Length: 218
Image (tube, rainbow, N blue to C red; front, side):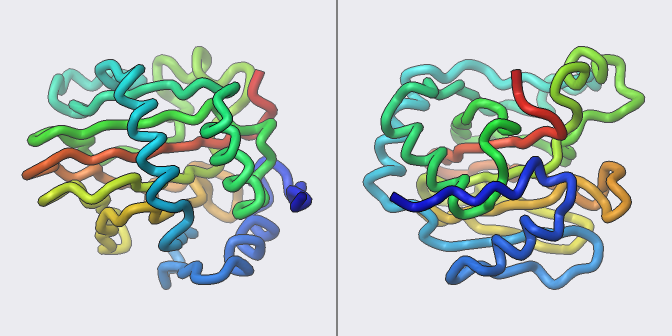
């Protein structure tokens, strides 16, 4: 059995960056503005199909922290995946081996589904320290450090992820992983991580997302 590396919560980005770059096929987007990594074929098609089935079984309308008055800001569906499911456990183990991020600092794995016309407008994954709900979401485990997302299928049209600050658009591919550090080198939240789940124009899009925190997830 492979030994899972123990590189911590991601507060110190250096070891995580080194771990990611050590993985075959990983590409780092060339930018000084943020740490953004892409890897094709992170998981296989069969596992992706199994995850899609599980998302469909538990999906509900997605929500946002600190509502901004735009009812169309995030129009996808979200599903919390059962941690005791062997399929979910296999993905969790693969994420830990690949990234070196400590699973104890990870939020439960989530799946998202985007139908035609659905999107998630430009946003960051960290919680704004001045936001009305910051204490509610961050009092126990702290803010988010890293995001890891995996595409599970390819919609017929649309559904890319756009990182505006670095002019990078990532197209969905089955099993493709995208990971980024939500913090600047000084540890403060990095607004250059602003990203958009672009509208699906035809078909449907499925992804899974794992967020990591400063402190262990209770």
